[in-house]
Image (cartoon, rainbow, N blue to C red; front, side, top):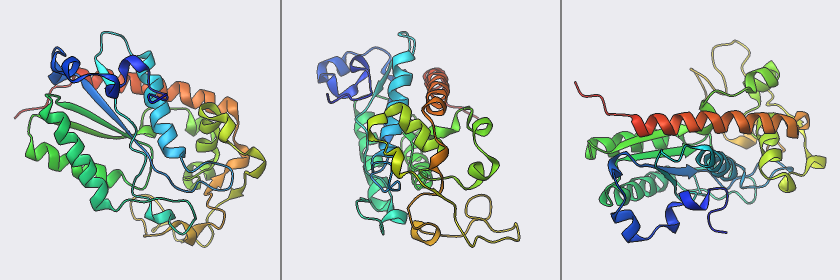
Length: 267
């Protein structure tokens, strides 16, 4: 079905124009856009990992949201800025400019319909900066439009207690956490027999510059891994995935509720 992970009664695309016109208090209705990517995730995971995670976590949150909180999920934005992975077959990428324009124009369409609260729930680590810049530009252009450019993993979750220190630092793509979560979301699409453990080699050892963090260097995925995996996918389990999904779901229920109640600060 078109709604996929999103509950049908909260799927924006199932509404009619008249239903949208008649929605009460549209300024405080939360419209949520799941954003992912179609990009390689090693030999054991499908290209759709980020899109699946964004849509599934949002869908679970909407399903658990109190009925008194008006919120709708948009169809997932499957393509993202994935050029760091384009050396691996199957990756489909938009430029930063194209992704920004899609975000800007879709937000403007929602604004014209009377909505004023838009959540971008993104699951691809290669594009938060694009979302943040687009959100700032939109709010500058439309001061009463409130945009929330959020990363799906940023709500409280038990990953820190479940993963090794090395995995927490270096397991940023198709490793333990993503593989475990996919076991809970789309278990039939996880090829566990092909899972590998591969960490980046040759990283700076002086502690000043790093792959991620405050002082990063630019890289593309093939600089760091041959398999496309950055982390230990062999350590993943369905039990971990179920715990992660439950925690992410609860976190996003709280975030959507907070967005519904949010009022823009005014000096």
